[in-house]
Image (cartoon, rainbow, N blue to C red; front, side, top):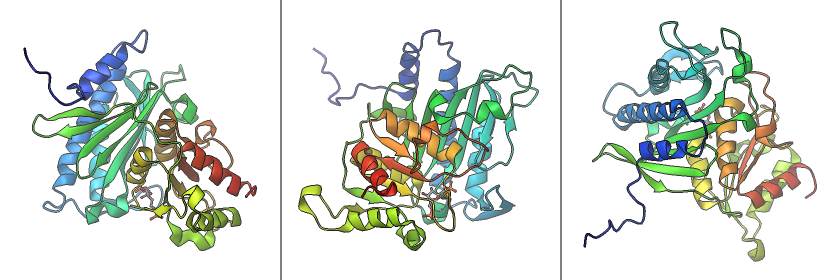
Length: 340
Ligand code: FBP
């Protein structure tokens, strides 16, 4: 009598999970699966550079500035090129957009074009790259909406509630691939000994409440009164409501949101007197993370409305972000609306 592997999680590779997921999408052609597979390969290639960053000449900056006026870091550029090159020839995308590039990234004429649209933040948490702190990549998938020969902005500037999938890759103590195609949020951890992503976090559900908050309080003085009251409320001792909450801020959005997804709580990047729309990008950061956290039972708002219902105006627009446990999102919204 053979003993079943003791691990409660059957040996589910990412590739098998993606293919089995196709059954949940009537009429699936495999194109979508191939996209997710391409992204998982890009993750491994970026991870290879990130994990040896301190040993080879990929730390530090290039002499290039991105659309947001940030100096482009070498690893940023490497990740950007790697994801683009991994995805441009698959024949399933009609256009891409990257946080690191001002304009749309069109599919080279030499390659076939497809019906999907990919947006990505090649390397999130750039301020932490050289300090060997967890960083990540974030991606968001849509279906093409235009029929014209050449796809364009309308195909990319879609509200987040039109996403057909999203995910992020964590380059941390271990390499993780977390994704969602509308049927739950699933996390896979890379096992270098077999070279495969293995299911480690099946159907992640964010706790409805959580007593961890994550925000750069250095900006406190520039926040509006509602946000300042909320920040003070979090720290007031009150047994029944589990306060004071604990403060955790890595400064890499993808890592702070991943922890929030697992432990519960709130991550906030509000607008302020200097940056009324905050710092984070709606299309590359807020929409995909909002899609994932909502699918896991949480919430994400910009202080006025649900992030996923925001109709975007431009590729690189910024938006405040309040994301986390459903009950905690309700509380911060009440403070922002002046009800508390
Ligand atoms: P990029 O690194 O992709 O530009 O993202 C912005 C970011 O680094 C987030 O990852 C992080 O949460 C935030 O900025 C940190 O901002 P600040 O240093 O103002 O707290």
